[in-house]
Length: 331
Image (cartoon, rainbow, N blue to C red):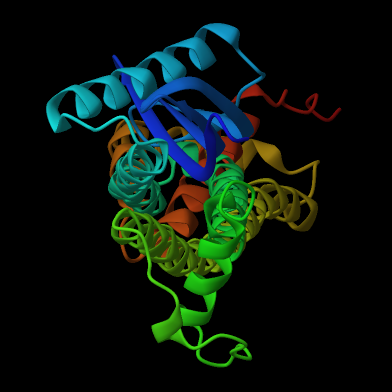
């Protein structure tokens, strides 16, 4: 490792393409030689695709998307190194590039919040009244956040893997940041290189990324709880509507049968003549049905369900009387 230096950082990236967004969570490794990044490696722990409404679905490893991600990372590194006029020192270049990559992952967190906001809006009016798709998206988002949080925590703990090329600086920096570590050497006895300032900034960016991802994880868990409550409430409403429909059908079918059984099947002539005068009033039935259907979504829906049941009941009675044959005359 004498001719180069290594850094490993957490990766959170969101690439927008048309109406879809690809979310990547993993880690990035850079290798610096002669003051330039000569190798860039990306490991993905999770990859997902989001549509315009924020719904997430898990993606299989796609070489084209991975190549697009690496090309964007390389472009960011190239633009930064060209504009910064970095010197040929490997550690300085690695520290500054690490800071830039950590900033990019931290900036991607705002886009991740937008995905959460989109899913929150979907909870207000779930598509087709079902929250199953939203729950699946929230669960996948929670996995992505958890994976990225783990990588950020590990990067802070390992000091961006500074201990591999610069073990002395790594241990001195840890003692400097954590006073609880047993000090074998006084801080004044060790002089930090100038590039340690950029390494410290990159480490703090990773720590900030971890803390904010923890907050996002709590929000997502709260949304999962809310989605579960909304789903339970929707199921209860659906069950209540089903109960009212069953009651209406029971009234519409049972009452006419009760009338015929009480009146007697052999005495339909007078009842049939009496029902003939009611047929002109059946013109009001379509209007009643239309009003009832409109009111089904209003506050007093159960009352209108009963009105529909009564209307159907009258129609069934009249149709039965109209279609029933008269008994043969006596004698």
